[in-house]
Structure formats: structure tokens, C-alpha cells
Amino acid sequence: MQMESQPRLNKTCPDNPDFVPLEWYNVATASVFIMVTGALSIALGLQLEKSLFIAAVRCLVQLTIMGLVLKDVFGTRNPVFVFGLALMLILLGTNEIVYNKCRKRYSGMFLSSFFSLGASTMVVGILGTKLAMEEDPFWEPYKFIPTMGMLIGNTMSGIAVGLSFTLNQLSEQREKIETYLSFGATRWEATRPIATEAVRLAMLPTINMMSVIGLISIPGMMTGQIIGGAPIMDAVKYQQIIVFMISASAALGVLSAVFIAAFICVDASHRLRVELITTDMPWIYEQIRWLGRIIKGFFMRIRTTFWYCCCHCCQRQNLNDNEENENMLNQH
Image (cartoon, rainbow, N blue to C red; front, top):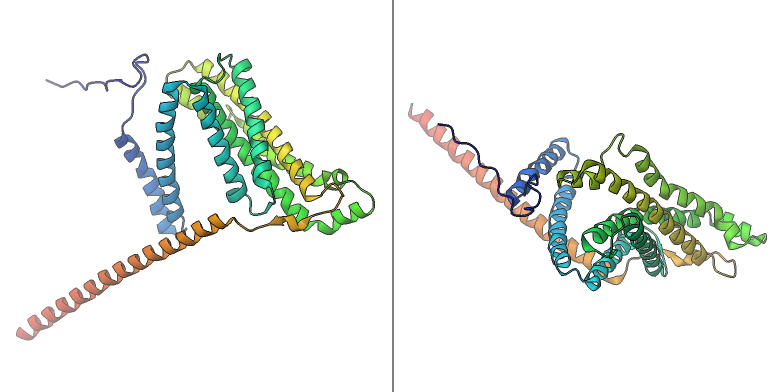
């Protein structure tokens, strides 16, 4: 008599019987793909295994923490917690722009980037959830927080591209800009070609995404909703709304960030202030990197010692085996 497999009991989402809850061993099973990628990197000498491992661990830890936080925020349905979490995401996004994505930065870049990222994502996020998604109240956590996360992630990337290009061009085209200013051009006239090209480059990924979405790729939000059991056409409409919101948020954020940077680096007296552009990191970041180098050196020494002990033991074992073989041959 054959035993029929029992379906997994759905305690997570009892209202949706098609939803299959996952356990941690499912995540462990998926980690095999990371191991395969790391093995390929080692075999081909790509030297990506360390970065891959660190990125995988960060992904696991960060998403777990985010899930625990969202679980509490969703349970309380308190607008203070919702906006507090959104503010924290904006701060983290600003930190990523200024200190990780951009090699060059200028004095006051953190505040201006925070304003550009926060204002663009908040305005588009509130209007989008209220008017396009018809959510009442608009701060309903299960819609507002994921929407803000997607807006912040895409807008952050656009701002980083635009600021990197702007600061690089202001440094490299210093003589050209100063020539324009010396002949009577305003700071807007002198920096307009750089600013417009920066905005164009920063918006290209968003435009390309809208061009191929649904035709070549199935976007993440739509995939998640379909896997979660939502009607397909509802998932399609939500994805379309989100993509349009992302394009508006990215455009507003990039425009404000680039023009603020240009107007700070070329002051009100129409002087190019290249000395404001620097590659220096804050003291705390230098200390963190110094600590990271010490920890890395410590583990490198442990690894070297481990391999030395292993190789030494293998050599001693080989010598002992050779001596035994010689003794046996002499006896014969």
C-alpha cells in the first residue's frame, strides 16, 4: 500500500491555500547555488569567492533583520513606526550614495543627497499609494513600506550615477568651465551641459528597464505577487504603477541632486570651487576600514598557519611512509 505524501500545512497564510510556506532548510538548499558559483570562481581563478561569500552573508543577515522589523511594524500599524522605518531607509540610502557609490564627494553632500532622495521618494510614494493604488490610509504598512523600499533603491542608484559623473566632469573640465565663467557665463550656463548629460546617463537604466519589462524580463514585484497567489492581472497593474512611480522618483531625485551639486561647486559669485570636491572619507569610516584590515590580517595569519601545519604533517607522514617502504625493501 503506497503512502500518499501529506501537503505542507499552511499556518503562515491560511486565507490562501495555494501559498507554500518556506523553512530555513529551503534557504540552505538554495545556498548550494552560491557554493557552485564560488567553486567556479576558485577553479577559474576569478578571485570573486570572498566578495561572493560576504555579499551572501550580508544578504542573509540584512533580509532577516528587515523581516523581523517589518513583522513588528506591520503588526502595530502605527504611522510613527511606518515613517520612522521609511526615514531609516532614506538615511541608509544616503549613506550608500555618499560613502560607497561615489568616489568623489563635496562638502555638504550628505545633507543635499538626503534631501534629494527623501523629498523625491516621499512625494512620489505618498501620492502613488494614495491616488494610484487608492490605499486609505496611504501609510498602510504592507503597501507603503515595500513601495518606499523600491523607490529608494532605484532612486539611490540614479543619484549615485548622476553625482559621480557631475563631480568627475567638474574636476576634469575645470579650465573649460573657468573659461566660460571668465567670459561672463552664469553658473547655470557653464554647468548646464554637464548637468544635463549627468541626468541623461542616470535616467538611462530606468528607461531601459521600462523598455524590456514584461517582454524580456518578469520584474521582481510581479513575480513575488504571483508566487504569493495574487491574480495575475492585479500583479501586472501593480507592477505598472510601481515602474511609473520609480521613473518619476528617479527623475526628481537625480535632477535635484545634480543641480544642487553644480550650484554648490560653482558658487553664487560664479566661481568654480574645485577645492570643495574631495575623495577623503570621514574619520569614523577610516577607523572602520583600519579595523577591517587588522581583522583580515589576523584571519590571513590563521589560514597561513593552518596550511603550514597541514603541509608539515603531510610531509612528515610521507617521510614515515618512505622510511617504512625502504625498511620493507631492505628486509626482502
